[in-house]
Image (tube, rainbow, N blue to C red):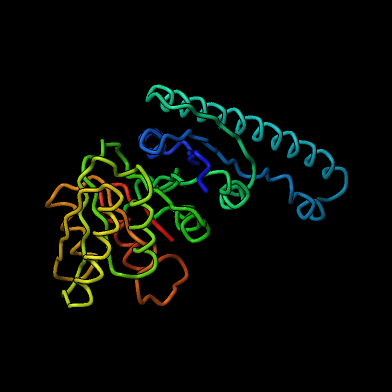
Length: 284
């Protein structure tokens, strides 16, 4: 059962504007509203009692008072910054013609996600966070945690928004990719957009049957689907297809067909998120 709501997370990074535009684009396609969250860290004063025992005599009271005052100022500034970030996010989504609500929360982003994701159909988050804007070699730590923790599809935005005109589905016959096919077949997300169903590797009779069955399901959902078989390792083959054929969005399972679960997310998925310059919808 769908909720008619998308959940987006913004943090003030350069990716937040893209998150807002893509959330609005998704909302229009799915006839949904957007709920935007900004999560601030807990104040440092929560652990201050461990420090107090090392401070001697009367100086202890004075220093603790100053530290408490500093914590209060930091918390107030953090709250004000969070409100400003949410106001900017609201303005972007409303300007795109979509209804939006904003929420400011304190604590951990993944804890907030776990508490609120049942109210949304898709989670939207930027590829990298505020502390990783220039770190092109790795993903934002919150992104990895969100993908690992969420039970909903996760839409990972690239740095700059661009309208989506054609979609590539990475297909390997595994449960995640089958779920991706079923999702697109049942939703309006890809309606009236050309879709390619891509398999990376060597085609076999079993692979062709799986591709034909997946195309039939997508076609039954009213989608215009092309099958593409690209030789090579999935990471390189899919990236090559996206780049050479100009796809604006990639849909794929978070884990492959015969994966050994690692500590973060599937290795092919991680590499695709790192290297692809288009947004990626991940299905668990």
